[in-house]
Image (cartoon, rainbow, N blue to C red; front, side, top):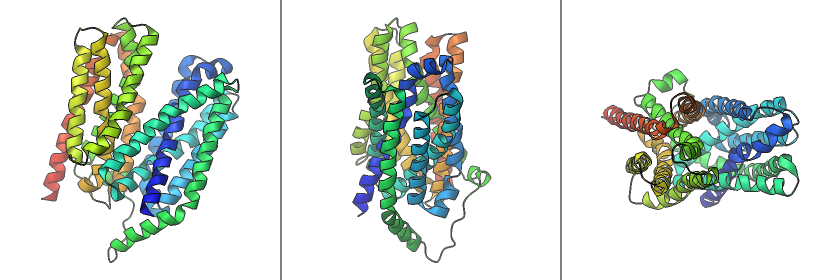
Length: 392
């Protein structure tokens, strides 16, 4: 039965990735229909990001009160409703309105599922689950593309994904007894202990190593999202590639992450979470160095692939190591603030580089990534030192 629940979680992670790339793939059509500037996509993504930060910070409280199964089912249902709302929207204001429940639903389910897997499954499953997210994120544009080329419009693309989310919600509701069974086992293992109360943000920040792991996560997601957003522009403006060729090269970054997470699942059999993070950081550094070297496009291609491969193990390994570093009783709270930090990095750091590229030079792209990587590595090492000192 535990394996059946794992299959359901795998499906949930694929479903989580499906809507994440929809806005980008549909926006070239959407903004013209709504007669708004192309830059207005940033407003919608910002609303979604703020919602995910808020719900991530509340995940500890919600999960302790309702359980992972109910939080996951309710969050996916909220996301499904929001996606259906997108599909019937006929104004930019309506899109902004439906972005609110979309963000609130996405943050809770992400934090709750990640914590459940970190507590109950081996590290390889965390890597493979995030690989499943990558598959979902890759499938989303194909579904949207099918809707557009079939003449059904972007609305039907969102509706298709909403229907898939509703199906997943039904599966999650049916599986609630499985979630409840394992949550009862968890409670039984802690008999005689006082029930853990939700931690406030102030209490979480005071935990040794908490601030450092939050900055680590902020940096990782800042690096991943900046690389994903600006790689094509860098290749066109700095390396002189055509837009079509650059887009193909940039897609290899995401392919590197997805393939790297599939491979990471096998590597975790021999390497622990900390070693996987160090390995990932080493690959990222190698990729950035190749981007800096004044060679031909092959160097840039190899650099982007290496950065993608390096990013692959970092996110799942940080999440999976949370119960070990901070304790199972604090893991949901810690993963909640880590998710919030991740969304903050995704929300703010790519636009900052956009400002730099516009007012200084896009050639600073590898330098910007390098600075983020150095801060991430330093904060992760400092977190490990504080955690180790606290356990003595």
